[in-house]
Image (cartoon, rainbow, N blue to C red; front, side, top):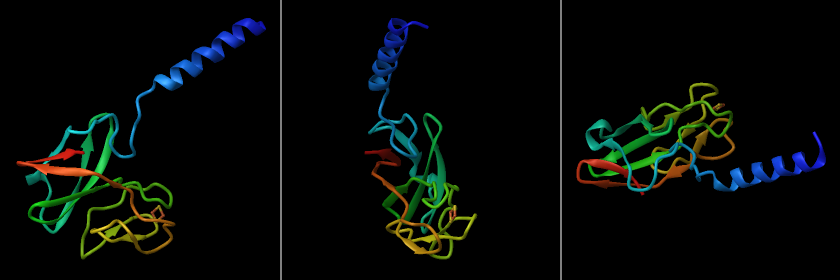
Length: 130
Ligand code: FES
């Protein structure tokens, strides 16, 4: 491969890199306003893991009837998918870090930080990305 061919290839890769869509953790290729679940899919006082367009996954938590919060379910320690809240905590099954369902903050365990919150809104009977 000569220098000219190599340079053209590098320029093409750079152009492709800048054109790639922005992806947020946990939401795959979904965009603001996309429906990610029905309100009825998320039990009050607990939560549910939901698949999102583009192979993402979110943990939805429903502390009260009209409030839903969403978190990237990848544990910040080593990436295991955490479980929906039970007995007042979200738990990682691998090394047992626990997280506050209201904020995603670490309660115990080796996780170096809390779960990343993803903004959502409840509109009618749907949970939408915001
Ligand atoms: S991967 Fe979650 S605590 Fe280690």
